[in-house]
Length: 147
Length: 241
Image 1 (cartoon, each protein chain N blue to C red):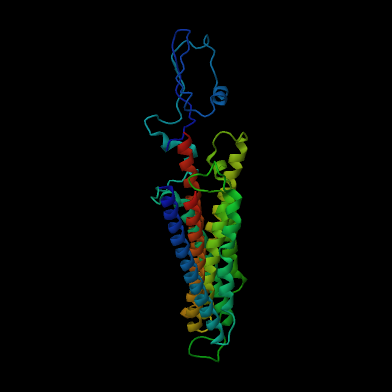
Image 2: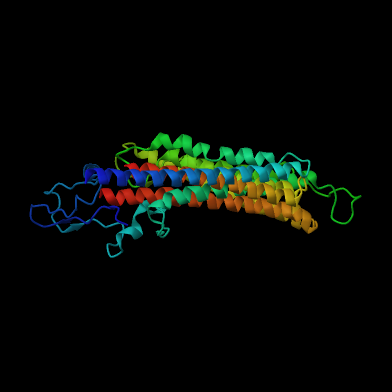
């Protein structure tokens, strides 16, 4: 009985591992496609300004990650970890994300880059940021499962 | 609103020597100080029925004359649940960045705009100068001032000791909101005086409209951030009671 339970849990963990590996491979594929789009948007039009979009979107989760360790008190904020530094991190993250979408639009509006380059860099940036978001969310869920 | 009022109650004194006070101590936050501030009559001096005039009629509901109500937000509760604060802060950050980028778009466009549409030889009649930047700077300063103030100080609850701190916090809150409103009014002034009255083509009046939308978005951002942060403390306040 105990052996059967153990083997069952083993197969379950194996399935979980396979699923997570598949998810990681898929996410890395999407990330590569996103970077490809951004680099293509630069290289096709001989204008390397949209590469800034990649930098911005990579930097976007950074304030959230830094400030999330500041305010979270295990006893006080059980409903929602809400304190000044955490809010500041979220505020800056939202600012950076909007900056990443707005920069190509502004550059295209003043004819520094072409509209095609703008669209490609926005799609690429969205893919990169979506990958980062999904990856962190998946990790968070796995953590909570082991609790 | 479940916050207790601090208004003095009517005190009835009978002809007899015994003094009867009607004052609910559970409701008033500082019973000792209000006790000391009211002039207490000596029982022998009053021979007739004496009644202090209440400053407001008691028939009104309590929240209508609570003097602190000015600074409590009268906005309705949203049903975003426990993620309300998070969503509000993200939304405020997005609005803030949107405001700045709207104006920067106009500034970059002005830098790169060489000529009106269709006639490439004539130079652009107007550019974004420092005058256009002033309302945005005012709004930004107001935004910082409003958000640097501790919300609990403005509510003026007990526990902070210094009563003048509340007064100063409200003064700075007023200055912050006045700066933001001044920025908005200034942007509209710039739009009208610099762009509309000179009858520039639509390509150039866009600078003025971008300026106005920058200030409107900044104000919206401040309001959203205020609601998000004060709503949560309200929630905790209700929990502790």
